[in-house]
Length: 448
Ligand code: B12
Image 1 (tube, rainbow, N blue to C red):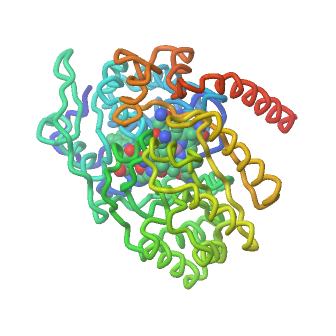
Image 2 (cartoon, rainbow, N blue to C red):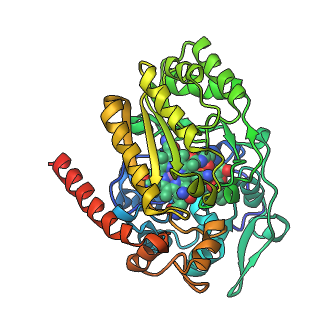
């Protein structure tokens, strides 16, 4: 590791999104674009996405113009979908070695939500990574770049002392004024437009307590809201300068708090922005008036994640909604023109019985039969057991995994065992395997 300049003026920084290892719908590297916006303007920053241009070209770009610092954003580790399981992390390890081989003297700094789920472990597995940053790095990264060789004073940093890994301690989360403003000029967002691949963040943090979810760990429970004017400016920039007509709001839950979400949508309408958008919603407080406002402001489909369909399951999952809330959303979709809804459920969650499973399936069938085109995907999945979630402890108590089970295992086969499945209704796992086969067959037919 070099970059031994007496001052950090004018250093070159390559911000690289981790490649996934297989083709997937493109997602704009919003984390890196945001961080680039918090770096001082005298640095020469490039933003490179191997998922767009390919790994080979990425490696060539790094080799031809070796940067002083490489910021690697580790966003995803695995697909978290049992029926379509893919272990990105295995490819990432190889990619890191490739990067190091063409940039032997660059300082490699890793971060991102995937990294922050297993920071120490990723540092151990990847000796080529010189520094790691835990959680949101808008304030930490500029400080770290200024003090690369004295990271001990900056909280949230992993670094190496000989063969030891040292952690400087948990950082405070940044406030909205600290959030970088995405540098779309570094990477054209237009190629990412399909399927809402360009993201906009309107707030960070999630006050809900769904037991499987990593968001409270990654972004805290307290909502930190970006001012509405600033969000509108970002949308204007995307629409007017880059011609982006479709975005996704990347907030954990978009319609909390409802009043502020309404204010944002009214501001979008007032600004005359045409872009369509998607987001994740909670059923709680979701009314017909709100749905109409969203529709009029450009939302073609509402995604919900009720996860369970009985009061016992919802309670066991830590949800704040009731079955009536889910049914109300269904009724709103039925009665309101132009409203399309999609639901995610867990196939075999805690608290479920065969009887409540049948009710959930009946609800899904009713959605398809009654809502018809107004029903988007009704998806069934299983919760991936992640660290720092209450589900992890529950999965141990229920005997799904044991205390020693590695949550970032060596192989994809071991990864398969990291999905929660209710032991008392294990027969459903067999049915799920049939459902997975049908799902794969349908996908195969569609691709032909
Ligand atoms: C919105 C979202 C989506 C949207 C994205 C829409 C869009 N147009 O952007 C959709 C639905 C498409 C999506 C898809 C997927 N997602 Co997603 N997604 C999220 C979510 C909720 C927010 C991501 C985001 O944009 N945040 C806003 C930006 C500004 O924050 P950020 O990227 O975290 O960056 C900050 C820090 O992480 C850090 N940082 C980031 N990079 C770097 C780099 C360095 C060097 C440093 C120092 C710091 C740093 O600083 C940044 C600024 O503070 C996160 C959960 C979360 N809270 O992070 C999950 C999350 C990232 N997704 C996840 C997954 C699994 C997926 C999918 C694989 C799911 C699937 N099977 O399809 C795909 C992968 C898509 C892809 N090609 O990358 C997981 C990843 C964890 C894991 N186990 O792998 C997460 C963490 C959620 C979870 N379930 O735990 N996702």
